[in-house]
Amino acid sequence: MEKTTIIANLLVWLFLSLFPTNIEGKMKNIKLFNLNCWLLPTGFSSENHSRLDKIIKLIKKENPDIITLQEVWTNDSIAKIKKELKDYKIIYSKNLIFNRTGLVTGLRMPHKSHKVEFYPLSESHSPLERLARKGYQIINLDEELTLVNTHLYNPTNKREKEITKKQCKYLLDLTNRLDWKKVVIIGDFNLSRKEIYRLGGNINFGSDEYLIDISENKYIFYRGNKHKKYNDRIDYLLYNKKNDLNIRTKLLLEEKLSDHYPIIANIKRK
Image (tube, rainbow, N blue to C red; front, side, top):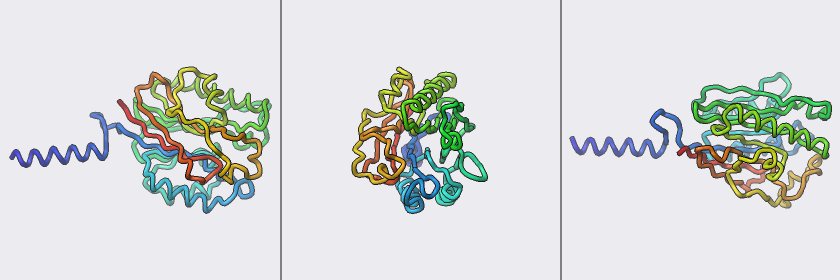
């Protein structure tokens, strides 16, 4: 009897080690993969098919619980992601023409609800940004954790930068209403670390790493990307400093699959 009990306890310990959950069945440790995939219509980005193959291969290698992607605009790209990543529930904006907002979230874990929202339009919006209609996905994982996947306005001048800042402030104000202490935001902010911090002081970035060397990434210098500044990092994971989470993020700088770099985030609940 004692031998059987010991074996049973070892099996339980092994299961909890491989699949960490709390008493209520919620995942205690969550691995997240984020990337702005730069999958625009042909002519506006390059090597889309081969790059998407490599992105999917990297996702399978990293084996995350959650995938958050930006700039997955075409329905062909969505179809391929759904086909190749069948273990994930793929959330996106269904449209006959394209994936409006360009956002995709993949979940390999239960969640309570999700929805897609758009940032308010302004008279200063460019025709392209007006068509793309940037926004955010709100994923309620459970009572204790909400994930927001977002992509903010891509500014080409100072006047448009104000639109991006307003969208960021709008998002931070929204998360306060959602209970900021339980919210994790990830995505492409098109703002520097300092610019984001000025808009909301209680922010933790999950990592001190904020400068990148873009000189060896050919996709960053593709036509249409000329306004990008050297060493600017604009993709972040944000959460409140009072949040009861331990989060570390890492940029995969060796993976040149886009004009952005993948982020791996490990989220641990205390």
